[in-house]
Every structure is written in C-alpha cells, then in structure tokens.
Image 1 (cartoon, rainbow, N blue to C red):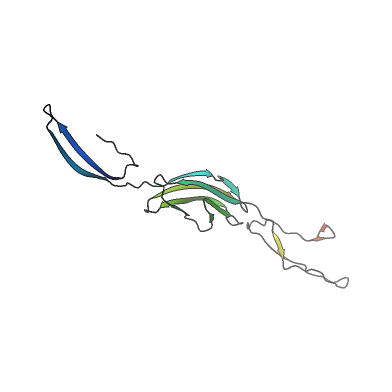
Image 2 (spheres, rainbow, N blue to C red; image 1 turned 60 degrees about the vertical axis):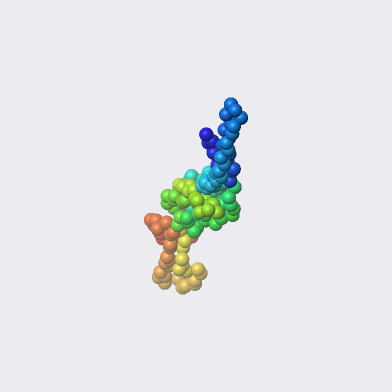
Length: 171
C-alpha cells in the first residue's frame, strides 16, 4: 500500500519480486504514473476596514499562496478599487455611503480559483451647504427697496432654513 501525497506526481518503475525456499524467483514490472492534482490557491485577509466614513480610503490587503507553487493572479469585482499587487484601495466620495460586499479572486495558472468575500460599510458624512447665485456687492440709494436673494445647494439634500443677515441682524 502506498498512500501518495500531492508531492508524488511522476513516473515510477514498480517491480514485484518473489522467491521461494529453493531460490526460484519471478519478477514482474510495470510503470506507475501518478498525475499531478492541482490545488486551488489559498487566499486570506490581512487587513480591511469594516467601517469607514465618506472621503476615507477602504484599504484591503490579502495574502495569497499556491500549494503547488503556481503563479497566482488576483482580481476584485469592483472597478472603483485600484490594485497594487496584493493591496486594493478605493478613496470614497460624498456619494459613497452604503453597505458593500466585494469579492477578491485568486486564480492560478491552471484556472483554479478561490474567492474571498469582504463586507464593509461607508458611513454618510454631512457636507456643509453652498451658497450660490448671490449678490456679491452692490450700491443703491437710500429709501429704495432691494431684493437680496440667493440660492443654496446641499449634497446631502437637507437644507432646512435660509436667512439673510444685515450687519449681523436677521432681516
């Protein structure tokens, strides 16, 4: 009995040999071929942010190896991430809030692959509203009515009031 291992691939000459008490013998030989069995790459997470705020970077670092010594290619299923070897990063923007689950795939030269799912959350960050279309500077005569208006935008769409102050007082 021979319990082969993953390192035993190759060709072996096997000979049966038998001898009796009278020193009579017989030999039979055959060739045993053990084919290579490819194993999938091993992929593990080194670090990742479980929760970040908008405008922060989601940085994922993985470790990959192949038990057969094959070359391994890494990829991620989200085009917002850039890749540098085993590091993936995405700098979020003000519109990135939400829950995410990305998959990193390690594929060897024989097209065997392993997936690693990585969930993370991007928290909403409040953005200050921006005043637009306002009167920058103007001159009028006394005793004249002037309409001073402006527009305001807010990336979070949560403007709840607008005020005009004249020399610091609400008008």
